[in-house]
Image (cartoon, rainbow over all chains, first blue to last red; front, side, top):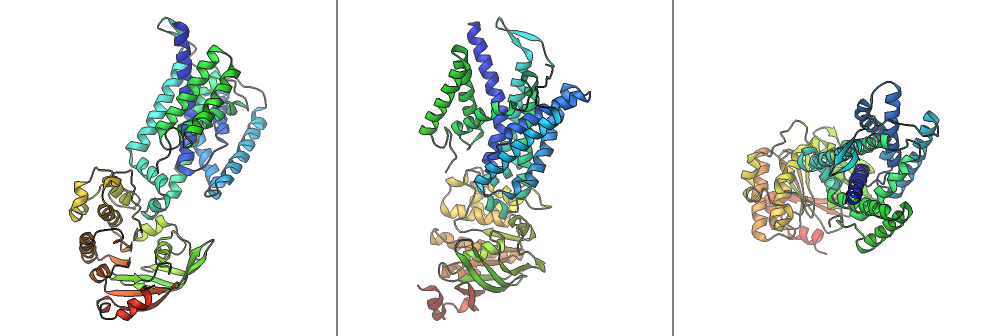
Length: 284
Length: 234
C-alpha cells in the first residue's frame, strides 16, 4: 500500500513538474507556431538564476520570484532579435531556436563552468501522508505547478487578454484586421512562455543537479507530451503530461529507468500513430 | 477620404493582380466595385486592409498614408473589413466576437454597446451562443456587426450576399445603409448581386485585369445593361 502511494505521489510529482515545463512550450507552439528548441535552456537559465541570486546573498524565495521575471525579459529579447525574423518559416524557427539553445548553453558554461551547482533545499522537512514519509518540497512543487496551470487557464479563458490571444491563434490575419496588435501579442506570448520555463527551472533547481545538461532531461518528455496530447487545448497538454509522466514513473518503479524510457517512447509512437493530431487534436 | 493611387499588389507566386488602381471614396459615400472573378476585387480590399503588401502606389485615408502598414494599424486608422466567407471566430460566442472588434481599438470601451444589439436584434438573441451554431445569414450579420462596432470611417465589404437567402440580403442592405447614413461611414462594396449594389451604393466602379476601367452612377445600372454585360458576363 505504502509503495503504491509513493509511486502515485512520485508520478503526480513528475507529471506536474513536466506540466510546468510543457505549458510554456505548448503556448509558444500553439500560439506562435514556434517549436522552441531552446526551451530546455530557458529552463536551465531559470535554475541558474537561482544559483546567481543565492550567490549574491538573496534567498531562494526571492530567486523564485526573480527567475521568471528575468526569463520574461530574456524571452522578449530573444523574440525581438531572433524569432521575429523567422515567423512564417516553420523549419527556420527550429534551426534558429536550436542555435539559440547551443549558444545559451555555452554562455552558461562560460559563466558558471561545466560542473554541477548545488541549490539547497529550502524546505527539507518531510511530512507523513497516510503513514508514508514524503518530502515537503515535492508537495510545494506540485502546488506551484497546479497554480501555474490554473493561472494559465484563467488567463487564456477568463480574461480579455486571453480572448485576444485565442483570436490570434484562431485567425491571425482577421485578428489583425480587427485592430488587435498581433506584434504585441507575439512579444507577450513569448515572454510568458519563457517566464514559465524560468519558473519551472527555478522551482526544480533544489531537487536537481544544476548543470548545463539539465534542460534536456525535461525537454524530450515535454515534446512527447505535446505530440501525444495535441496542441489544440490546454486539456490536451494535461492529458499528454499525465500519460507520459504516469507511464514513465510507474514503469520505472517496477523495472528500470531504461525500460521506462523504452515504454514511454513506444507508447508515444502508438498514440501518435492512432491520433496523428494528438489525443485532443487541434480543431478543424 | 480614401484615396488610392497607382496601387500595384499581388501574390508572391502568381505575380501582380492589381496593375495600378486609382480610386477615391468620399466621406459618407457608398461605392460598389464590380467585375468578373479573378480581376482583383478581393485582392484590392486585402491590399487596402494591409493584409497584402503593395509593391507600388499609395493608400491614403484622410491625408494619412497607410501603405505598407500592418492591418492592426490600418484598422485603428478607421478602416474595417468584412472578408469574403465572413471569417468569424467560430468557436467563440457572439458576444466574444463583438468584443474582439473593440479590444484592439485605442480609447474605446471594451464593453459591447447596446446600440449594436439594437441594430442587429438577431445577435442580441444569440448573444451567448457559439458563432458556428448560427445560420449563414446570421454569421454574416455578426461579421458586419464585428466590423462596425469599432466605429470605422470606412467599411470594406466583400460579397456579403454570398450564400445568403434573398430576404436576408435585403435586411443587410437596410442595416448597412442605416449605419452609413447615421454614422457617416463610407462603404466600399465588392458585390455581384445587383439588388444589393442598387440598394446600398450611389456609384459603381468596374475592375478589369487589375485596373479600374469604368464607372457609373449605380442608379443607372439597370438601364445600362451594356456595362454589366461587358464587365461581368464571362
